[in-house]
Length: 386
Image (tube, rainbow, N blue to C red):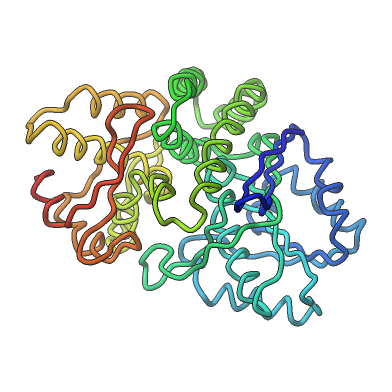
């Protein structure tokens, strides 16, 4: 089992375990006498590994709760529902709340645990690639407010995050690729040779999937993830090490940690507009709403374009950076073209969490593996990208 540490000074504040199977999860909770499990209902129904988790919980008489995890239910109402359930089940200050699900589940459970009885311990078993490389690592929690993303929340570290790539074998192709966008984002921030390696692996996986009839696609994709298990495990662990290092150096997002928001100011605006307008686009031949990872891919391209304009002057055609990022994302199966004009995003970006004093902390790309923080007004961004 690979163990990655997040520290505050000399103190270890969170551990990330990366293991090929789910069996070792039981040893991770041995030290906690009172465990309460909250699982995404969709995971409970569709993820075979969830049955193994349920068996572990049943052996230990762990109370369990199912939640609906979606952007629509990622609200204070669901957080209060979790808190009420904890209270009804006698959860005390020595409780450990275990969240089993994707990033929405970890966000809601982490936030609920942080405010229940002024804070109880919590841990994550992330079941999506996006949660494994990003949402379940680093201690950010939060929920939406009036369709504005993650406006309410706190930064508080989980006791541990248990990452098991095996659970990805039941993850739909679209959800997997959404997580791939966050993985690539991480390697754009800090490369260490993994960015091109990730693009190569993800592109190779996509080649066999593309064009398959619907009745064959799901089975192929599950087999494909299993076949690339070792490569994915290495990439996931590498992405976690990057994030753990950044969080260790800047846990409360005063400086370097802001780099992890690369592409996200655009992405959150894209998601908000899509939800407001009921916009859908084609994913794997199916009309669908824009998922977070898909919006991040679009945001990365816009960040590359903005970087070109800031560092190299106004240009009408893409430079090598924007063209490369866009082509790589496309090769991996993502749709990197934003369907909305930037000026339509202005009002939403001005309310972003990263806005201070009328300026937004944007993350710009000098080259793959080298990003910088750059404060701009929303008006300046709209002008540069017009």
